[in-house]
Image (tube, rainbow, N blue to C red; front, side):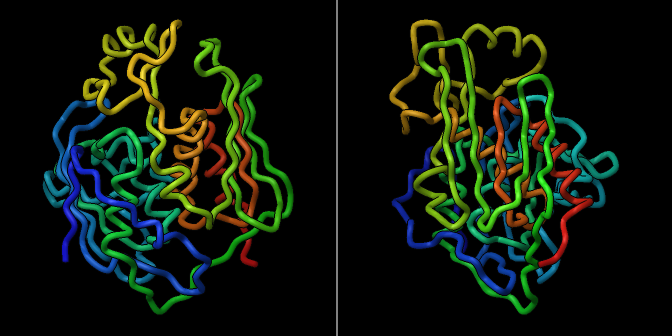
Length: 298
């Protein structure tokens, strides 16, 4: 069975499949296909995600380029973090990888080949909901090698001004995110989520959001060419332009989703409490690079 996903699709709930600690690695039980437009490029892209061998990790393949170059979904592949995370290997690039990677990592897909015929992962509805539902529909296959378990021994902080992201020693893997905007409809929000609880219900549906007064400027900068009121929440001084929200704190949950996706570039989440406030893809990926050098096997 191969599952197809489009930006119009709205499959039913499959909350029975969630990440559970598993001693062995997993891959998809069947391929997933998807098509949509990229947030920043506005380019239509088709994606096919297929099972990969044990130990292969998650990696992208630009099938539209000569030689079909591969791009590992690892922290050392990060080349750009302006309003999304972009990976590259040589001249091959892939942008806005964070939502798809968050769904795969949070739901236990350790190894997968992600084929796409363009430069950016489709935005779909602005969240990871459709990716998570598609993974749940095809299910996972356990593989033969153990899944590495890592821990950190000392707190690690990355800070710029009052924005920071940190990894703190703890007994469970948890993500906590805080944001603070001058716009009354957003204001100060927090959300905390432990790995292993319902990603599909609590985190995956949270959509990307933008500020009304920034849209024209961003478009002049060649960004958000594929953005619309169908795939992004927009907030102005008088409130949300396109309500309703899926959660009262949907923006904070979406930022947490981005953090999960960016830290998935480690390959496996260490046992740590990841705490972020007013952070960014740049800070997220800086933390991933720093963690990669100090993670130790339990």
